[in-house]
Every structure is written in C-alpha cells, then in structure tokens.
Length: 267
Image (cartoon, rainbow, N blue to C red; front, side, top):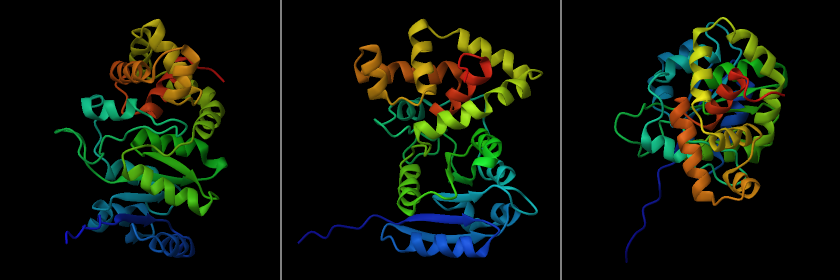
C-alpha cells in the first residue's frame, strides 16, 4: 500500500496589538487541518524581530499598532526591489488572475523563478476609515488587505489564496478603495519624480493594453475582460503580462495603482 503524505500546514503569523483579536484569530485558524498559527506579536517591532514571524508563510498584519505600525513592519519584512519589475514567472502568474477572484501573483510565490524576492506574504487587516493606510501597505509589498469585519470563511480563504501566490483583494473592494483614494494618489504624487516615470510607462502601452489595464482597474477578471473585448482568455493573459512588464508592476494591484497615479483611470 502506498501511503500518501499530507501536505504541510500553512504557517500563519498574527500581528495585532489586541490580544483578544489574536486569540480569536488563532482559534479560528487552528480549527482548520491545513492551517497552523506558528507565531504572534503585539506590535510591528516585535514582529520584525521574530524569526518565527519572518519564516511564516502568511502574516496577518494589523495596521495601527504601538512602537512600529503595520506598514513599517511590512516594509521591513519584505524585500524591497521597486525598480526590478516582476520576474518572468511571477509576471506569468500575475497575468493569469483567475475568473472572478481579482487575484494576482505575489513575487514570493512558491516555486518562483531564481532571483525572485522571498519572504512571508502579508495581508493587512483594515477598516474603511483606514483605506489610505491599506494602500500604503500594498505599496510596501503586502499581498492585499481584508476588512476586520470580514466573515470567518473569507479570512480562511484569503490565507489559502495568498499562500498560492495570489492577491486577496476582491474586484469590487479594489475599485471602491482606489476610487475613494484616487484624488489623494494624484495629489501626493504630483511632486514625485516617480510620477513622470509612471506616466511614461503607461504611455508606452499599446491601445489594446491600455484597454486591458482600464478593465483591470474596474476589477474585471481575465474571463470578463475576454468577453468584453471579444478576445480569448489566453490572449488577455498575454496582454496582462505585457502590461505588468511595461509598468514594472509586481502584480495586478500595483498596475492599477500606477494607472490611477498616471491619470489613466479616474473615479
């Protein structure tokens, strides 16, 4: 008889200054056979200093914490290579956003190409009044965000989704978040040299690639983009991959942020 080996549980770290929140999350996560809480921290400084947090597969990160907030901790936990652009394998995974999920690849996905950044995937926990902080966390390298009042099944699904190398921002939530912050994005970047570079990269897109990027910003999946433009999903995936490469975007969310900053997409 051939024994099948059970896959290792996904290792989860919890970073939140409220012990009650951490305890509740730990009970929920540990109730799942494929998930395991391996580390907890009450602030960003302790999280960054913890080998157990750094070696976790997924980190659930609160944003507002004493001593070091979740945004600074995210930057410290994740390798920063903003100018490198996505590695080919990462871009290919990001381009293949599955239908209806709004998902995008994270560069530290398992089995990534040599030279891709490694590190835990960070999901920030936020509320609607902290939208601007959620965006900063995404820019810092987080794989996405969840609202603190998300249903338990959504939280569990998000952990598994991120572990697969996808982002956990639903299309409707992405659009609502970015629509809310679009004026701030453009104002904050007006004096930034990066805006010129981002505008130039958007200008380098072909008309079809710009169409695809606009639909990505609307939250459409590859399947929905294909239907709207009368293309095959394989063709859409190719266009998305080229968009990511030209923009130097790590994933679909980063590409959409660039589109807002450059003024291609408006609320």
